[in-house]
Image (cartoon, rainbow, N blue to C red):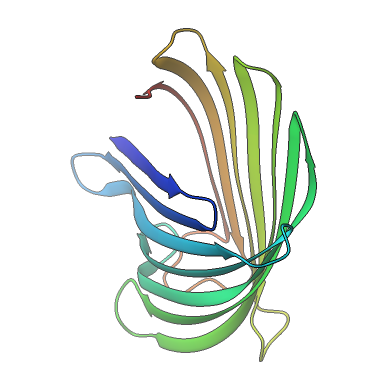
Length: 196
C-alpha cells in the first residue's frame, strides 16, 4: 500500500504547501516497509523577487531507518537562481531543530541541523515535466553526522485529468538511529495521478 497527497495554495506573496506520504508492505509475520511523513511549509516573498523566507514543520516515521518518530521545525531563506520559460532552479539554506526517537525508544535525541537544498523543474512541453529536490542536512555539532535525500518525479500528462508518473526517492543517513536496518533506503514507483 502506498499513498501520497500534495495540496498547495499560492498567491502573489504567500505559498502554503502540505505534503503527505505513507508506504506499507506487509508479510504474514512482519512489516517489511512501514514509513510515512506529513510536511507543512509556508513561504513569503520578500521585496526582492528572487528571495522568499520559508518556515516548515514535519513529522515522520520509518521502520527500516529505525525511526519511531522524527519531528522537525525549521526556517530560512530560499533563493531563485534561474527562472526561464521551461526551467526553474531554487536553493535553500535553512536552520532546523530535530527531535528523534528510535524504533524501540532506547534513544531520544534533540539536535540542530542545517538543511540546504537544491530544487529544479524542467518542462520542455506542456505534457512533460521533471521535478527534483535534493537535501543535504549536516548536524551542526557533529559535521560527520549528515543526511542526504532526493525526491524525483517525471510526469507525463496524457489526458486533461490523468498523468503517468515515475518517482524515485532515496535517503542516506551517515549515523542512523539505533535499530536501523540500513543507512540507505530508496523507492522507485510508477503511478497514475488524477489532477483537478
